[in-house]
Image (cartoon, rainbow, N blue to C red):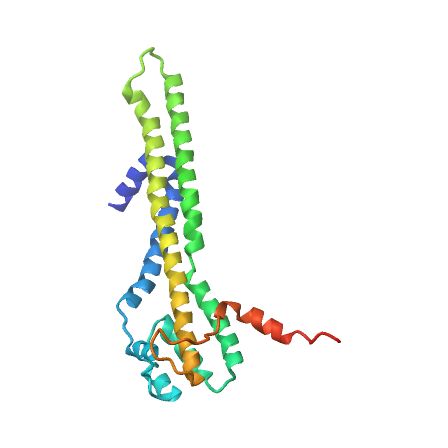
Length: 238
């Protein structure tokens, strides 16, 4: 059965069968792996987040850490990472969280660059198949001894041209769409996690957070390195 399927694909795609199959396989594997990571987060609800946002989280950092020890997900992992450093100064916690978030962001974007490359290469492979198909078609016409040109004479080369073009586009569209959507999801996840960790860091400092309308100065994780670099600069000589 598998041999017949491969022979059928080879008849339709010619020499580009293996390159297109490899692109299709990589695209499918990356999309399934990213979806397996995304799916659990869609159905995970954590009550402590609502308590934190509403200012009703009334427990020690150690008890909250124990509460979160079995929770999975980006926000819970970040909260555990922060709570383990509760005894450290606020500036050091901010540095550690910025490094942790940068690492997690790289993990969430893993494979997406390859999807973009596949989405770019696949149509080019299809275009190459189109050219090869046209070359084959003209070779068949040139080798024809009779003066008449029948559809059967054009079928082989034209079929190769059309099949490879369609295969390249069928691979490229899901690859590019998946790369864009999963990239947006990764950015949103990191931003949401940073926002929650802002709240949690202020909670550790004893800053009251009573609803979203309360004004407070949360640290900006994306600018932590710049802030700390400025702190390390020597004072100007008078």
